[in-house]
Image 1 (spheres, rainbow, N blue to C red):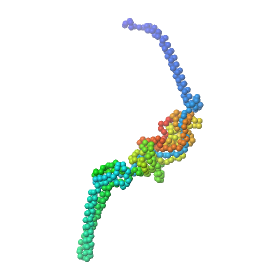
Image 2: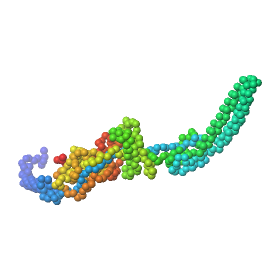
Image 3: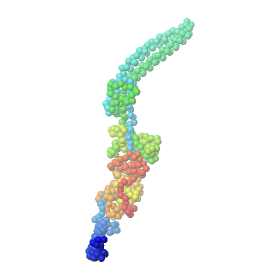
Image 4: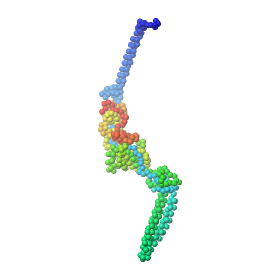
Length: 458
């Protein structure tokens, strides 16, 4: 082995001993640094705690200035009012009569007496078919009738003569009887000729086509000059009755116990039609018919409502939102819908106490009528609830009321109970927000997305 590479423990020991003092100094400085960092962290935590106590004082009187940190909120007074119970459904405008004008004879279309989209009355002229072939045929049958009438008159005269000769025993009775049957044959020929004349007269009348109903004419389907036939399925035009008009919509079968007793007693059930966006009211009508069976696939029943449609606001096959007024809850305890929050215990509100602190109150709601909700239990008239600024509230926090609405029971909106069709029923701003659209949900659900009540809430 090379002597230069051989080292003993004694050769290494002095080197280790020389580095010992530097290692001890480094360890001492590291411990001091850790202690300083820990003290700074404790000071930061303590400062944060004190700031939190300053901003969020407790209801027991802790904190430095409770009045300075009171939350500003909007409030409303619980009052008595009327809540309308309304069923919302998606409907389709359906005319009472839609007629496809067809020709009843074959011939050339010579004239069209309407313009596309024109409003026509019953009996107005629509189209003219060339009637000359039928007039010629009618004249032919009239000539045949005159011929047969002459033969009939001659036969009747001969019969009268034969009957006189038979009475005198001048001729055989058989000849007189045969003449009587000849008279009957000519009478039949005359009747046949007259029927053929009447048939051609009717065909001539069919050449002049008039409107069978009052309504609006659609686009022209056949132009003048074409040869139209009775076997054609296209037709000449389509006329749709607009006044009156109906809307067909489906309601959940659970609503039938409230609707059918009124319908059977001829009580007028009001229906309001709104546009597709649920923003504008189009027309107001009444229920005219209810279907005779429940659709087992959807659990709904079809209802037809009739509208006068004097301003033609409803258009055939238009999709509308139908609102059926079932009943009105009178003198119900009402609270603004914006004040109701939803959490694990259910629906609740923040009630403003006499000392300007808030506390959570669990409530039971009923129907929702636009901006108002009927409360079954949990509140009484005259109490104040928070309607704005609930995101920073907690039980026992002191508040300052910036604005207050004391007429919460005066407004009216629309309560929605959906038809359960999964067709995305819409919300109207201030005209009927939809809560619980599915038929399986409760009649009134609190607004979704609200915060949960803080710990310690009632």
